[in-house]
Amino acid sequence: MTRQPATAERPDGAGSVPASATAAAPGRTAADAPVPSPFTGLRRAADRAVTTGLAKVTGAVVAPYQSAVIRIGFTFTWLVFLLREWPHRAELYGPHSPWGWDLAHTLIGTNDAFTALMWSSSGVWFQIVYHGAIAASVMLLLGWRTRTASVLFMIGVLSLQNRSVFMGDGGDNVVHIMSIYLVFTRCGRVWSLDARRARRLAAAGTTDDRDRTGIALWLLTAAALATVSALGLLDTGWAVLLWTAQLLPAVWWLVRRYAPGEPRTVLDMIANLVHAGAMLVVVVEVCLIYSTAGWYKIQGSRWEDGTAVYYPLWLHDFTPWPGLSHLLSTSGLMIMLISYGTVIVQVAFPFTLFNRTVKNVLLVLMMCEHAAIAVVLGLPFFSLAMIAADAVFLPTGFLRWVADRAGRLLRVKRRPDPLPGRPSTLVG
Image (cartoon, rainbow, N blue to C red; front, top):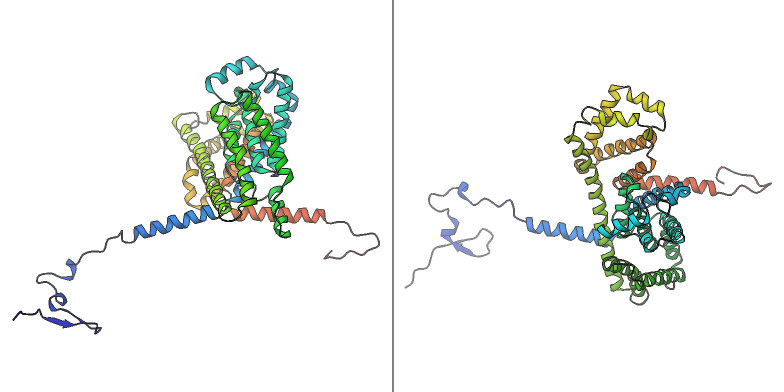
């Protein structure tokens, strides 16, 4: 007869288990039991975090207020600059520039930079490009047909700045880079004429499927791009980029009109993902600007002994207010505070993004510093460009509060005066 192993009843009455399993092995204690891995469930948590993050990024536009404020900031800076230099436009970028057309053409041939001003040396063509850049800036500033306006704004910025590369400063470099990034963002979702039109259509319960204005604008830009391409004025890379930017709105319109279901949702998700990536690049770019500037300052002695701050205050080109500049330069304490404070803020700022309170404090300090540079050194456009770049870090709550206050002020100003002979009340 086969001998059966001894068994014991389970406490919950759900059967029996071998008796050997209920007793500890000889010589083993509780301390010898296997220790649970600290990585248990880590993969599941990581998958859950990735899924949640992707849903957040693709399900809605990330940082719509921040993208709108940098759109307004950079277009305003560039527009004011173009208007300010309008009397001198021919000397800066046109036929009277010291950096002549032949010199610019030679340089463009070596670096392959994009500029529409190299398509013709005609003075009429220069006027068209310059005033077209102004018109594109107004369009993007107001948020009218933002997708098309962002591409035209980029073309205007690159065309003028690449024509005369020695006419700009650090602020122009920031506008140059950000004009490219804005093309990939959905920066017109708030604070724009496009957003107002979308709200009105939603309130009316209709959709502007025909969009005659948009179609006419698309046909106009398509005809211009086809002409430029036929003349062979674009290289392959820029031709692909501009035609892609031209055809995407047409695809979007066709999908919205004839396939408003899942295809429209997929396109929205892709656009949101590209927008989020572009906003991330903007954040990284601003951090790189400050970190590289700060670390380069540390490597030399000019900021350590205050020379970098002291000497510009005595240069004629950077002293619009000589009395104020000389007052600051005669104070050793102010020179030390400005020198060391600038280096500390620039080096520390990228690391403060992990602490919202400290980040907001340094953000205020940096904006105040740029405002002071605009006044003391006479560099308003550089300061405006840097303040616009800093604005990407402004809290959403603060931006919405500012928009609400501005909206209330505008509504109060638009309120009509009471009719003659009609008593006015506190409630209007």
